[in-house]
Length: 353
Picture 1: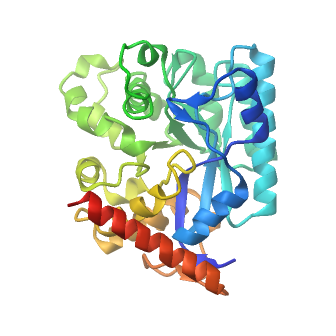
Picture 2: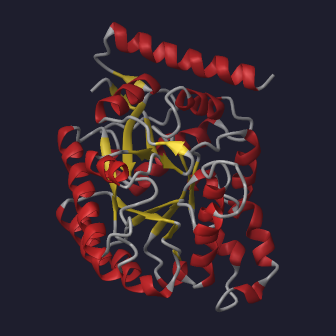
Picture 3: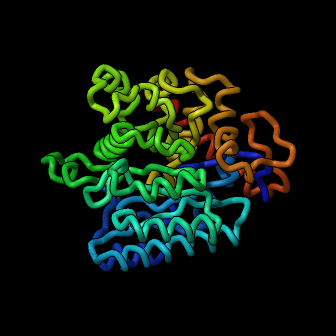
């Protein structure tokens, strides 16, 4: 493996052939306004090798596996996607992990699939959409699933979807730009409202895209104690989440998140392939040039915090450095890595002018 120690990407999507076929059969060419991109494990590996990403934790993006064909179809699609993920991990065990997708709208089937994915396939955790067919995380109907995940001390990656109110809002702005952030924020606040983080304290939660608008709303929720079922301290609850940097590495958003949680609760995410290939070096270089985080904090974000959640990805002789450590690297791999870093620096310089 050319990368001995590098970044760990917790927000990296896969697109299984069976999922693409379902989207095409349903006549759905877009995901939140973005075309469904071309993807393969080899494309991810090329991007990872060029950008110093040692391991990517794969996850299925919106709209999940419920396409309105009933519980059996949703469960079958989830099973097929998870088996496909397990196959990729078997081929590239040090390069990929995966969050399992569930037929969340059907809680009993979701529990059975979670058991299979975690206990049989050995996947790293679970991806749950902020909302699915109108059902937001935190809803009491999901308590059985929460209990199961709590027993297993699961890592749950919360990824946004488009709620019907986001689709029918009269705006021509693509959903991935703003409404995705609304979905994450609504889900996080609903988890807080129903005291899920306290009732199931062993679940480790990761919020996509720096938590949407939650960092900006945390104080507002604190000022409205009656909002929660038990008068929960909203600010304290918001500080229990992990937050990823996907498409949110700027000094502006980083300052807000760092005001809410320490760097030890921030994780690197690329959002590839929905974020096109050139965006990954831009995000990495933006973090590298950050005025918000020290070098030690960047080491935590790029790698160390993810190892805390997924210990098996630690190297045998872990070195506390933000540098990517490579071995047996070919000239072409070195050249591609150089081009990628140069591209990121150039775009960031132009963007910052």
